Amino acid sequence: MPPVVGDETIVHKYAKLYLLPQNQQGFDEDATSGVTTALGAGGGVLAEVSVAAAEINGLAMETGDELYWYLPIAALNGFDLTRDIHAQVFFESKKTGATAGVDFTFVAKGIALGQVLSDAKVSPDGTITFAAAASASPGILCATEQAALQVAGELSADKMVMFAVTLADDGDAAADDIVLLWVELTGTAQICDSSGIPQRT
Image (tube, rainbow, N blue to C red; front, top):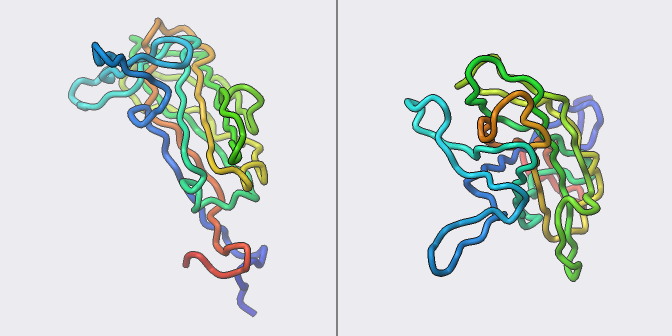
């Protein structure tokens, strides 16, 4: 007998969401000067990666710098929120030679309708402290491990979700040598709605 939707023997599809530093909401703009400033700790700024010919930028960070995003929970419509979500941080190092000891942390926090807004890092629903990452040389794409947020079932009743990434330690790199490129979220795709009606094929 072929497996039916909901059968534990079928292979689950995956949902993906990418959090880019260029799309962050953790900044403010001065009404007079137009200068943007980070609302989180530190002063991370958009900067070109070390390979100029790549023509791309990311967020140059140093130890303690934070970056925040918020999304309506509908942005996670493709995710089965009864299951866990995994995160992975992608970055580049500008340091000459190898870089070691790069530590990121990442949190997620759901906000229900009528709930007071607060810092995502205060009583988060899920937290990841990634193992130290490294870079063999400047100008290469690097990433942390992929790790679980432990948020299965935590966000289902919320209307908004907040995320924050922190460079907890830039290792042996100098200030602003670590350039955040994106955070990738991976979860199990929601194949059926709560009534069992298939949502995708």
